[in-house]
Structure formats: structure tokens, C-alpha cells
Length: 393
Image (cartoon, rainbow, N blue to C red; front, side, top):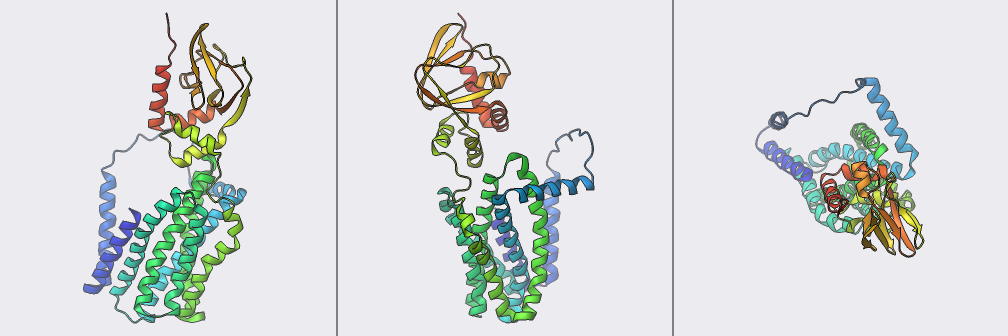
């Protein structure tokens, strides 16, 4: 949707610049802003929560500083943040170079700026199909590398071959590569970041995004003055591939984001409670699972105790006993322990291993935070708990 809106705006700009004036473009943009505000005004507002203290400007700066601190504390997140910042800096230079290429290098009419921008939008849309395949296979580091190389070659192309065809093809490929880098980096960021720090990190990166774009816009005229239009394009094109090349070993270190145990992930995906969760959330839960060994006859949970964990059965078998009466056996892929956690009551049954059993445990806080924070997962969990409610008589 983001790329479709970008393309529509570029096409409208090209038409207006070719048939009317630049002022008409500003009027259209202002109208789009007013329309957006009108649509947002129709949304029903949530009741404002009560806070202990109102956030002021100093508090916002403090949260931004915490975001920077969290970013710098994790080398993997720091690297992804570097790639995103470098990408936006390049975007800022291209906002200027697009006009320079169309009007100065190629001597085209002012409407050509919109058409070249539209080529970027078309490339971004096409990239979506390739990304669906690439990201489904988890090759996020490859996405960063491919996107960086494509962008570098595409930006340099009009500088090496200053003709109209090269300019349009180059910016088409810029859109393609830009989308690869942005989506792969943002996906990695969500997979690598913790729930506590991710919002602050993203907040800081969004703030630095504006600064990086401004710096890029300032750098572009300086490069043109120093190297000429063609030299500036080649220099800008070399920047992102150089960053990716210098940091390739680190990028390859998280080829599929943050690695997770395949068996753990499969157990979660096969659970009716956790199956509705998105991939990045499932991966986070996978990394929180703790292996627990239980010998034959050992009680894993005891009726009447307080519940502190939820369990998956990885290997082996357990029996469920309620009020001294046998209820059922459970084997690999099944789970237990959700009732006490969801309802905040003592354990309603005793679960005992019938033979050597390997379990995967999720602590109470992680279970509740994950399940109750997702509507469908919470509904499934309550349905499972209802089906297993204590039987009487």
C-alpha cells in the first residue's frame, strides 16, 4: 500500500508538471493532506488513560535517549539500524539527484521528474513479489545484500550511461533495491529486538530518519559541485554496497534473523493456542522456551499448587490425574498448564510423567503477555481451558 501510494503520487506529479505548473502539485499535495485529516477525524477516539505524570518535552527526549542506548547496546540491532539510516541518507540524496538528472544531465522537461519518480514506485511494487519468496525462506541477510547491490548499480547507471533509458531503468531498479533493503531490515529489527526495547529503538530510528534524509539532501549538491553530476551518481551508488560489504560477515551471522530451534518453533505452530500468532512473535516465544527433563513417575505439576509455567511435551508421555482419578494421557506435541495461568487459580490437576519425558516450559509472565496480548490466541486459550475444566462426579 505504501508503494502504491508512492506510485500514484509520482504519476499525478508527472501529469501536473507536464500539463500545468509546480504550484498545482503543491495544491494537490495540500488537498491530499486535508483529505487524510478528514478521514482520521472520523475515527472514534479511545478514552485517554490516566498517567501518574504527563509526558513533557524532557520526557520525550529521555525516551529517545533510551532508544539510542538500547540500539547501541546490541550489536545486531545497531547494524540493522545502520543499514536503515544509510538507506534513508541515500534517499535524501536521490530526492535532489532525481531533479538534477532530469533537468541538468538529460535536459528533459519538468514533468520528467514525476515520471522518473514513478519508475521508482513501479520498481518498489515489483519488488514485493520477489520479497514474498525471499522472506518466506528467511533469507533476510541476502535481501539486505541484494538490495544494496541493486541500488548501488542502479544509482550509478545514469552516471555511467547518461541517456533517458538508463535514467528510467536506473530509478526503476532503485525502487526495487530500496524495498528489498527496507523490508528485510525492518523485519530483522522486529525479530531481533525485545518487547521492552523495540518501541524505543524504532522511535529513535524514526527521529534519526529525518536527520539522515536532511543530511542526504545537503550532501547531494556538494557532491555535484565537487564531482559533477555523473561523478556524484557513481559516488552515491557506491555508498550502500560498501556499507554492506564491510559488514557482510556480521549480516550473514543472522541469515534468518534471530535463529530459533526448529523443533520448538514447530511445537508452537502446531499448538491451537499459539498458532494464530505472527511469525516474529512465535520466534520470540521459541527463544523463551526452557527444556525440562522429567523421569518416569515424576510429578511435573501437582494439584493445588500455584501455577508458574505452561508446558509442551517434546518427547515422552504424561498422565493427567484429577482428584485422584485418571483423566487422560498426553504425548508429544500436546500441552498442559494453561488453566491455572489464565484463571489465576491453583493447579486443577496433577500431571505425572509415565516414562522419561522432555518438556518445554514457558514461564507465567511470558505466557500471559503473549497469549492475552493477541485476540485470537487468547480466544483459543480460553476455549482449550474450557474444554479441560475440572470434571465433577
